[in-house]
Length: 89
Image (tube, rainbow, N blue to C red; front, side, top):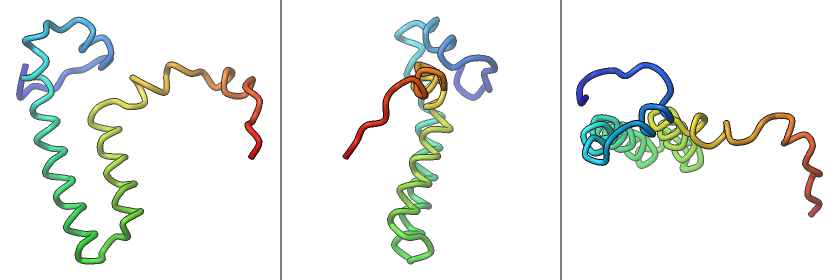
């Protein structure tokens, strides 16, 4: 599975995989994330990005590579968010 691009739902892919397949499946993404995060960290140190922007970029990289929107955000519908009363400070 390593080195190939998988199509379809990440949830379906990870839900159907065997425990021994997890490491090889996640490793290419993890290696890419490490390289990208190293670049972002260097850009922050060189003051090409603010620390806040660096954190935002890292968050976006992680969300994109590891399917944050599919794993987390799809648990909530827009309707359920709108139906929830806003918290007051």
